[in-house]
Image 1 (tube, helix red, strand yellow):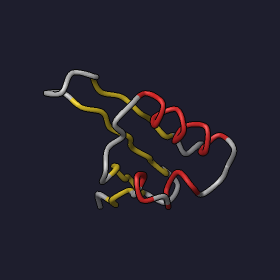
Image 2 (cartoon, one colour):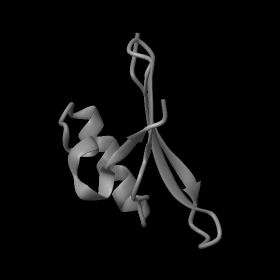
Image 3 (cartoon, one colour):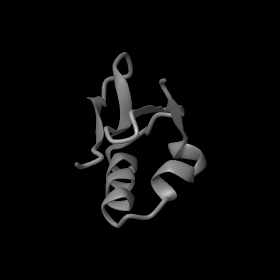
Length: 68
């Protein structure tokens, strides 16, 4: 079973961007604390996740909050 990560939102200031991670096996759902401020930052989060590095969840700009 996969553990998906997703990014989304709108570039308009009233909407904003976000990222979330879900590990269905462990029952973990997290949402980013400090949202990305650009499409490039969202790409960096996704690329880090794809490369199976932990930077996507440990960098200050990518801290995730466990929603449980």
